[in-house]
Amino acid sequence: MPHEEQREKNIRLVTEVALDCFLANGIEKTKVADIALRSGLTERSIFRYFETKADLVLAASLLYWKRILERIDRMSHTVTDGGTTGLQDAENVLVCYSQLYRLDPNGMRFTLDAELTLHAAGRQRTQQAEPHHAVSGGNAVQIVHAAVEDLQRLAHLLEKHLAELRQLHVAPVLFKQRHTELLLQLRDGVAQARLR
Image (cartoon, rainbow, N blue to C red):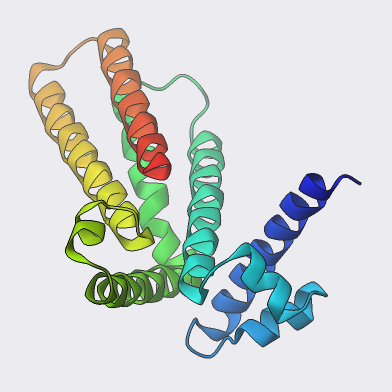
């Protein structure tokens, strides 16, 4: 296997193992040595792929949310029979998301712990960096915060449009078109946040 393929495979493995450890034990109690042992690699190898534990938390968070989005998509499709309006589809997605607090309490706890860990790491990096580095937006916490802000703006926009559409009783075809536009904006916002 070429070196780059092996590297990508190891990064995926470490990220998945780290997520499993973080979900089971919490971020604080999980040591990089535990992740290395479970993944069959050395700590040194892990730090070759991830500069800090916070970088590993960020990668695990992105993996977790990717899985959650896939899960919500599956859950929302099993609730509907395909003959629903865009408004009903949006409501189903929100209901599925709210159920995660009951269905995946460890995951919800992990997301909160990850946010605190990344915030602390960003603050520490900002304090250590020269002023022009802090403004550049290059650290993981700034990326996550920018993505969260983008998602919050888009969610607010979606809620606003849902309320307007409910009042106007817009035809389902027009609603689905607008809903699709908003979801595309949301996807693009997440993609741009990952590129920062």
